[in-house]
Image 1 (cartoon, rainbow, N blue to C red):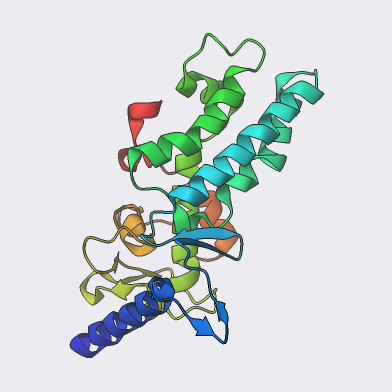
Image 2 (cartoon, helix red, strand yellow):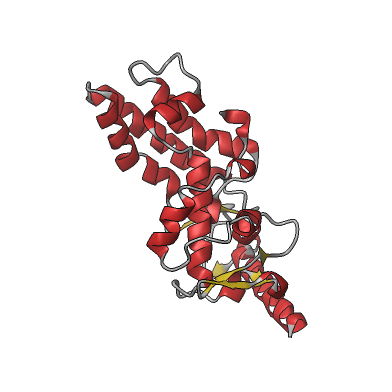
Length: 239
């Protein structure tokens, strides 16, 4: 059964890759030729040929920087209202579909984090503080931490069937690691080795969750992981 499951998943992956990268072949339609492109947009996410999402990250970071600058230029008030404007109008740009494109390499992580880093540095009385001190003073989590929490929330929704996504299409459960906790599921998600996809990113953080984790509801799970220390899974080079 395990062999069959892995075979089915592998076939799905191969089929998906073949469909996504047929852009290498020029398609002829009468006298018209479909352009050969290395990057396409699907549901607001720019997908490049090597799945690095570098173009998408550059695009959203530039857009977020511009919007953050407009907030500083257009409003002269205390830092708390400015922070609320940032979390309302800027941060969503950097978190839309983050489970798909969340960067793995340090340059991508730093590029996304630079938006919040620069915005908080320009706040009144914050310029002399380190980034970690500014986040603590403003009660803000880093963007990297928020992406990790978002990964965990989506993992919860997939495994507990809160989303209409077949769990085997994204993850392979290691049955030896699955346990029932408060009538819910706790397990390890693995995928083809060497590919830093959602399931591989979330694996270690998911398995580190305490045994008393609240799995009763999505809201309860969100509140619980907001109190869990995930610093061991974050890059502290940029703090």
